[in-house]
Image 1 (spheres, rainbow, N blue to C red):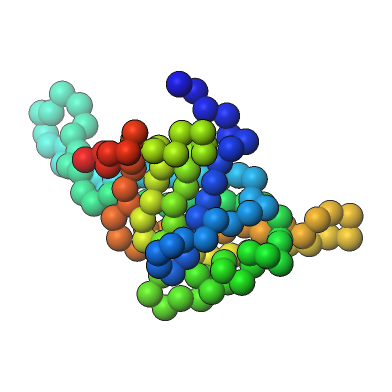
Image 2: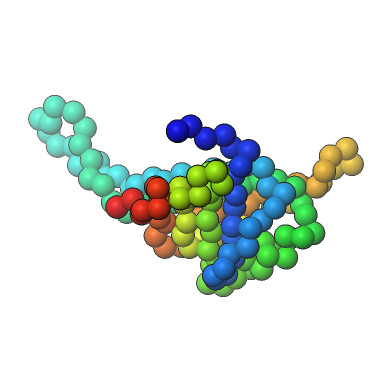
Length: 136
């Protein structure tokens, strides 16, 4: 089933339960893995060894006084925060979650709404949950 992004949901907080952050309108997640080149003389093509996984991501939307406190508190935490991104609330058993370091940026202009962006960096293992089950 294909999903439309209009029903996405982002939750952030310092512990359970996480707070749903309203007024956001975009997100991104990237899961990469370190790779070390171990190509040797005579190999038919390049060869790599896989190392540790890394996760990063971000979100953007509009500054909202209803939610800015939770975001700033999570970004200021010396131990990091937790996040959960549900691509579509119509399929709530599909989501990405885990511990993160959170950075927040805000912009404003005389001819535009005040906007907020956040970046997520892994602070532990991120879990991709598909149909209610973690992907191993």
